[in-house]
Each structure stands twice: as structure tokens, then as C-alpha cells.
Length: 482
Image (tube, rainbow, N blue to C red):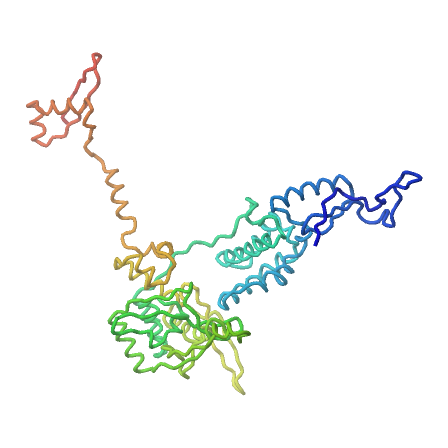
């Protein structure tokens, strides 16, 4: 296809060639209608029209320069609304895991689109972003706002790649501050609290506390753990999978968070509890798709999502896999309430035939949910002096830095060595130490040979040594007994 040569602006109201008789350009049928001057010939850009010739020439010069640099973005491509871009272009091209897709979609459709969705992409400026951040912090906690802000930045980055924006406005405007989560230190339970919560769980679920506390497992990892993952002879547990549920409530197995399988040491007491649990509550086979519960659409997806069967270590009383929401509401929160950690915030009324059933409703803070057992595991390991590198591996962190960022406050004696060193610096009545090449040091050395000075030193008396340089460059020393 031949490339049109870029020319100067053409006048759409007058014909290109002048009349041979009059020497003037005659009017076209478009005369007086629409914008007068048109620019065309730039590769990948539709024709552009302007009211004045000067505007057309200025835009053409800028467009040519930006095109040579590979930076040209047609502003009309940015007139699409943020909602239209997300729904029609950005979201359909995503290939996220179901465990990521559900929360991400919820954040975007419940917060980004309602607040900022009507804005054309090119009109998302500093003012719009500041207003968005303020509105967001009025709807969700700062930790959630930080995640949503990250999603918006990812969307705008894609708009830049798609040549709908020249730059990401979040990165350009210095006055725009991203929401930052309030830093909270990880909370760990005491031994008495762990024992109280474990005691008030159903007998078959007490092993879940042992897994969270003794291995540092996340909830999905504990619910996806199989009996064959325990290597009692080697004294380790293989963390190979987790049990997850997609946004439609369909269960599936997938790799642990970050795709990091790991091996965690198994203590003798936890070994005894595991053997007792498997004896009293035999593991149950469970078959679920791998990675994604959606039916496969091709042979590759069929291989990737092929169901696997494992002998689940934790199951319901009916031998089914555990649904985390039901377990949290009907088992965990009840145990927290029985242990005195939370109180009922309401009541749920349900009709069952001719009877009315009333059940309390609890709202447990996040720091008291199952994940607190993982924090407690980390605190016990660090307080015992375990290596941060080893702990990072057992927890499945991507680097020891993450472990330190989360759990440095659990490390014993944190800051005490530095505090002792600084205290030594500030200690009163320290002997004054002079450099070896100082004249004062040489004179003091000679003065210690004086019998009077020797007597003061032997008696342990305090001395105040004063010295000053004489007019001839010597040093006058005066020793005063205190």
C-alpha cells in the first residue's frame, strides 16, 4: 500500500487550482461548513482538520517531530472513556490466575469505574487524580486504596503502550501522591491465647491451628495440605499447593502464593499431633482442577487444568473440602468469641419451617484471623535466634528482606547492642585520651615520672590536668588534685 506523502495543510473550502479565466480559486461545496484546513499523510494517523491555517501548520510540525522520535500519540485516541478502554480493550487482554482475577475485578468495577470511569483518558490530569485519591480514601482502608491505585497505574501504563496516552499521568504529576497504607506491625499471639482458641474449635479442626502455628502455613495452604505431603521419616512437610475458590465460588488447586513450593521442618511434637489427627480423622480424597476451574477450551488448557486428586488432611465432618468463608464464620470466629477475643456485633434471624433461628454475627479484625498463626510461627522462630534466611525459605517469601520488613520487631534484643554502644559514648567521667603525637601527651608522660604525681596516681586521687602553650612554643602543665 503506497504511503501518502505528507503535505502542508489543504484548504477544504477552496479548490486547489485557480480558475484559468479569473485566476481565483473557486469555492467548494464544503465552503463555510466544518473546519477549514486538513492535514493528512502521517503514517498511522487519520486526517486531522483545524479552523485556522496557523493551527494546522503548528500541529503538523509537532506531529512530524514526534513521529520521527516514535512519540506521536493522536489525541483523538485518548478521547475514549476510561470505562470503555477497560471493558473493551484492557480487561479482555488480561490472563490472570482466578485467585488474582476476582479481587482485581472487584477493585476496578467497584471503585475505579464508579469514580473515574466517565473521564476520557486524555482528561485524567493531576486534578482528577487528586480527587480520585480523596474519594478512594473515603470508601476503603488505606491498604486497599494502595492496591486500587496500583491497578489504575497499570491500566494507564497499558494506555501509553497502546498509543492512547503519551505518558502515564500518575507518573508525570508530582503533586499527585499515591495512597499509602498505614504501617502496622505483624501481631503474634501468646501461648495462652493460642491454647484458648484451639480448645474452642471443633476437635477435627484443632489440627488447623497446629499447621498454622507449627509450619507457618497460610489458610489456603493448610486447607490444601495432603497426608502424602508429610514425610515423617525425614521430619519435613512439603508445601506443594493451596486450596482456592474463584469469584463464582468454584474450588480448585494451585501452587502456593508466588508459585513457591517449599519444604518446612516438622518438629517431633507436631509429628505426634499429625499422626494422632490422621488416626482419628482419616484423610479424604478430593479431586479438583488445577490452576483454573473454568472448563478448558483447547488441548493446552485441558493439560494445564487437568484435575488432580489428593488426600486432604483437613475436611469437614461430611468429608468435604473446607470452604474458607463458612469455616471462618462458623468455626473460627466462634472460637475467638469463646476465648474472649471478640464480641457479637449483631444477630442474624432465619426462619426454618415454623421456627425462628437466631445466630450471633461476629466481625473479627483481620489481625485475629487465621494468618495470625503464621505471624506467631515467625515470632517464635526469631525469638529463638533462628536465621532470617532459613525462616524466609520456610515461609515462602521471595527474599529475606520481606521477612525482615514484616518481622524485624520480633527479633530479640533489637536495638539493644546499639543502645549499649551509644550509652558508652555518653558515659560521664571518661578518661581523656590524647593522640599519641600530641605535645600534651608527651608532657603528661614526663609528668607521671614526678614523685608527687606518682603518689597521687598510687592513692587513686582524681586529677585535673590543665596545659597551655607558652610564648616560646613550649607547654605549661598544671596538675591539680581534686
